[in-house]
Length: 137
Image 1: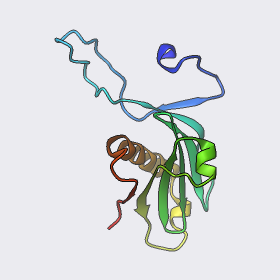
Image 2 (image 1 turned 120 degrees about the vertical axis):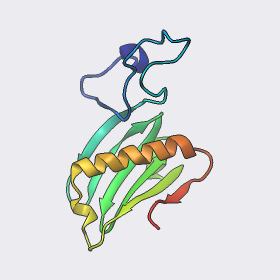
Image 3 (image 1 turned 90 degrees about the vertical axis):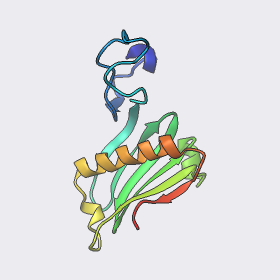
Image 4 (image 1 turned 30 degrees about the vertical axis):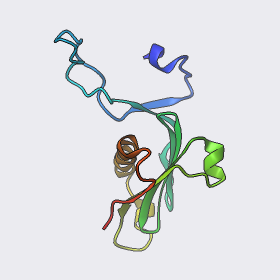
């Protein structure tokens, strides 16, 4: 893991969004029982707070900001944190809506992590195709 991440810092937290390779690639190049795209999120802040619930970090070298407030949960990606602060958004996904006012702001942290996971997978597969996706119809 240290080779993949470079020098790991003890203050940084990493969370796998997929499974790491469990078996060696001894079956003719098949990488084992887990998908090749199993990647990691590097957290700046894990989901925390209420009204809104917020999280931020990096995925595939892109900065992301997640927030759940009012009735919506949204994740935005930018090439850098400074770019996000200056509204240079590379991709934005509406991940969920909650029925009542302020319901999303009280979303449980496990559900926020699940939605962040979904947002990162969408970004991985949709990168460069569409920059705004509404998952809620």
